[in-house]
Amino acid sequence: MAFNDDSFIREVNEELRSDQFKTAWQRYGRFVIALAAVIVIGTAGERIYAYWQSSQASASGDAFLAANDLAKANKQDEALAALSKLEQDGFASYPVLARMRAAALKSEKGDTAGAIADFQAIAKDSGIQPAIQDVAHLRAAWLLADTGTYEQVSAEAEALTATTNPLRHSAREVLGVTAYRLGDYKRAKEWFTAIADDQETPRNVGRRAQMLLDVIAASGKAQ
Figure 1 (cartoon, rainbow, N blue to C red):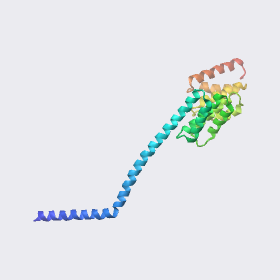
Figure 2 (figure 1 turned 135 degrees about the vertical axis):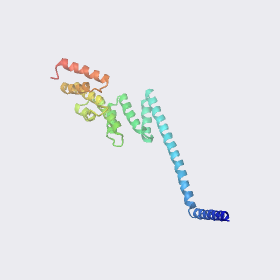
Figure 3 (figure 1 turned 45 degrees about the vertical axis):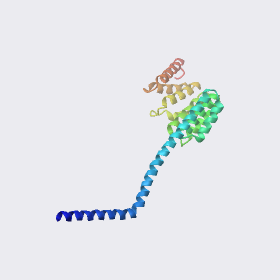
């Protein structure tokens, strides 16, 4: 009889649990369904957004390559137009890359002043990554090296000469070259010596610096 009582009690408990579940479902079921829907929609939305990002980046990459192809084919005006469009409509880093490439293309066309202005604008744009700003400063400095004053070149490059800056070798070189061009051999010697003494200086930069140090030493003008 005890066995039958135990079976009866289990059946009653199962019925109670079933009733409780039904009651709970009736009360909270719509919230469970809503939560499940949110999870499903959220997951689907995330995947759709990831696909959209990938698609947009791919399209911008194709547009950038197409603009480069136009430049290589000596169709500079068409290339500049394509890059201008990419600056406006591009995705991810491509608008900035388009600005950099357009500035370089202006330099190749002989519009040095326009290229310098573009690189300077990029260098001052706080919305651009610092590393790209530094590259823009350096590009402007090298374009100024042929005709600009030392102060103009220094304004672009001297901040890049710190020992922790990966662009320091080229920044020191452009400052040294500019000083040498302007006949400031003492200052040129200081920059070329800094290049020669840096153990991490690239070999080609170090060779050029040492060659000019030898020329300066032979002239006796940096005493």
